[in-house]
Amino acid sequence: NAGVMQNPRHLVRRRGQEARLRCSPMKGHSHVYWYRQLPEEGLKFMVYLQKENIIDESGMPKERFSAEFPKEGPSILRIQQVVRGDSAAYFCASSPTVQGAGETQYFGPGTRLLVL
Amino acid sequence: GNSVTQMEGPVTLSEEAFLTINCTYTATGYPSLFWYVQYPGEGLQLLLKATKADDKGSNKGFEATYRKETTSFHLEKGSVQVSDSAVYFCALSDGRGADGLTFGKGTHLIIQP
Picture 1 (spheres, helix red, strand yellow):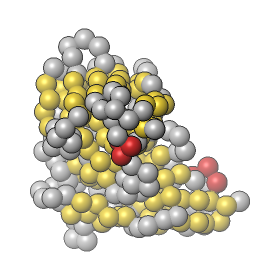
Picture 2 (tube, rainbow over the protein chains, first blue to last red):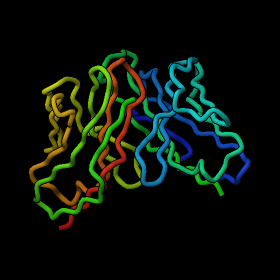
Picture 3 (tube, chains in turn blue, purple):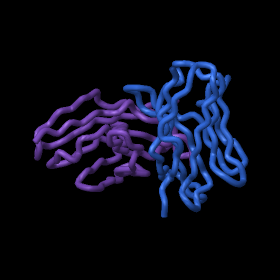
Picture 4 (cartoon, chains in turn cyan, green):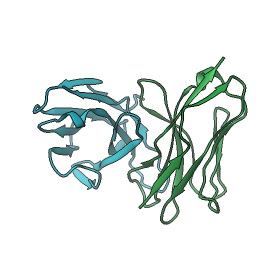
């Protein structure tokens, strides 16, 4: 059973370009979470999605950032008009369909975004 | 809001030493608690978890006990190895169901042979 897949693993963008990060959850998982890890910091929750629905986006910056998890295909985190401060590692996690307290989230290897 | 505080690193130990990494939390309700480990250039792997007070999570020689009275979830290992060198993150979920985790800043552990 393949784990959580993320691509690309490394992404370099110039200021003002768009960054598009992809996440394929583990087989059978319908909950996806995105986190951002700034250098020397812990992970910060950004958004929680189920298929075709955004459940909690309380950690998402109000502008330039968006996320989706379509019925078919991977979850996408999109950052428009990137700035240097967006440089970070972005991690995706997934959890099984059944909800419950203490549900384990399984993390992907991350996408390291560098904005020049 | 929820928060997790863990000891600052780096923590440097000799092989076979005893390890403690402190973690305390603030949360409403009855959170679940987790320890994740991150090796260089990789994503996070779940190390252990506990979902209610007095539960002990354990894995690969690591242990942590959920202490509600002290709001703590300290990570311990009796004899560390060089291969344990990594960054360790304490985290909580606030028990409402599947939701975003709140992480501590991480503790970089370095084990010297």
